[in-house]
Structures are given as C-alpha cells and as structure tokens.
Length: 86
Image 1 (cartoon, helix red, strand yellow):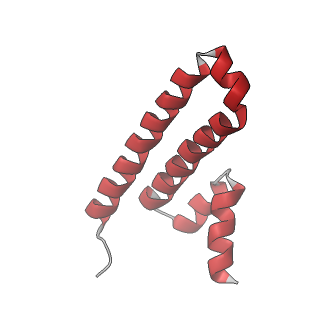
Image 2 (cartoon, helix red, strand yellow):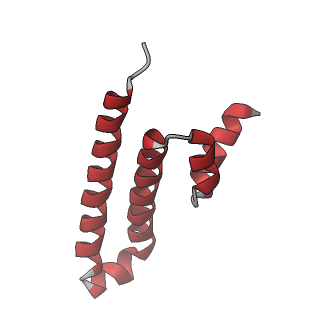
Image 3 (cartoon, helix red, strand yellow):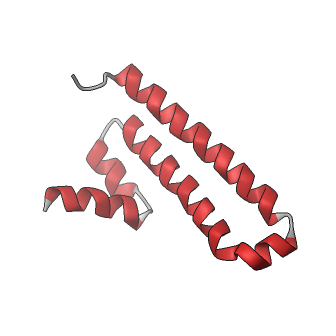
C-alpha cells in the first residue's frame, strides 16, 4: 500500500525538521574558525545533506510532481529520478 497524502506530509515534515537540525549543527560548527579550517569540506557536505532533505520534502508535498522536479535546483535529486526513467 502506498502512503496517503497525510502520511507523505508527516514524512516531509520530518525531513524538513531533520534539515533544520543538521543545518543548525553545521552553523554551530562554522562558528569555530578552527573547525572551519580543518573540516571545511565536511561542513559543506553537512549543508548539502540539509538541502537534499529539503528538496525531497518539497517533492513529497508537491501537487504537481513533474513541475516540482523541473523546479528543483539540486542536480543530484533531479538525476535520481532521471536514472529511474531511463
């Protein structure tokens, strides 16, 4: 059984909450110049994880999935669905 709209909204809300949490952790770490200097690439990865979570949440909530996918600014997410179609 596929999830209904309400269940998708719960999943999307949790993805958004996780994105907020991980971005807050990244911001805290970025407040320390030594951490930024030593772990800049990892901090960028943390930010990208948050962006991907937000993009997935937006797709789950989209009224028109194809349009939302066209509007998605993250190539990684678009590529995931392109791989499924090809």
